[in-house]
Image (cartoon, helix red, strand yellow):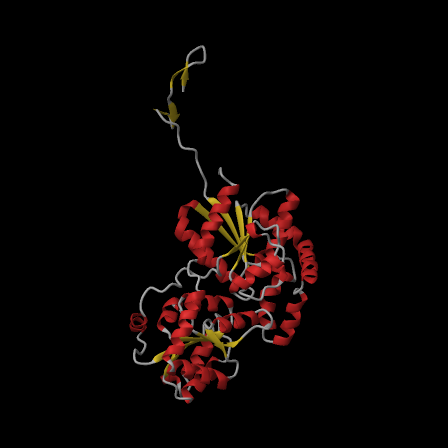
Length: 406
């Protein structure tokens, strides 16, 4: 810009890289920095945050810069860093786990537990925030959200925090901290629990549990089966036990085959490759399809008629999004009991913890087309296939509201 001696503008030009132009150079911007907190304890926290990250990257690409941190493994002081491994061991002793779960179940007890954790991890949380500067923090782990918000308040840092609840129905009070800018819950029962816990409505969103955006119906069942080379003339029962492949999959498959139900069992053992190898050596193995870890789980669910699984929130949500009826045979005490009630009460599935009940329920669904169709329709009513993408948009909108200039 050129002025005369009196300060009046006589010409407007700008110098950009030594070149005279008639417009200003664009203000340099940087990507929006998103810090994603999770933990490997149980797997659900990690899969939920990965689903949100996938949706964020699909929608915003180079506009964002994401740091993903396992709050326990990467920053928690001893012995809290051993929690993921301890969690897996505790699940093998259900009654012991129930007692542990009840410690933080209750508003007064949960408040005391969280205060203790916040105090014990304060220095570690400061280090976390220093090493991962962010414009917004997204957490799928309840024991990380409150200590982070406490540290931000003590430092007078105004960084928005979004907490994503990864339990479907049975929610311990430690999930709820009214200081969170937004708390995202997956179901109507969870929404009412959040209100009762003091989360204001303007900071509460019922969106659904985020699972990978790939869990959306893209083809008909026969097309999916042809791609997998599964039989077209029989119903298919998909048996799963979570990513770790811990559960009575072999015994269930053997019972189904022995009952001579007109169904092909498809067994997925996840990371438990030894179990897959052992099952392939069983006398009945030729009447089933046995896999270890698979990449195309959306395709498997699309091709199946019914899912037989434990009551994990992520697997249930994936099945709902694929309109797949369920038979639940196992649940984590306390934590997953509400999941069973939710699935059964809505008609999307059945609870069958004993082999004899599971076989009878599967026979009923295979032989009664109307019953199977009703369960699939109920699953469709509960589906939230766009949850991850909706949360991604919410993250971006919240961040830009608090950081308009970067």
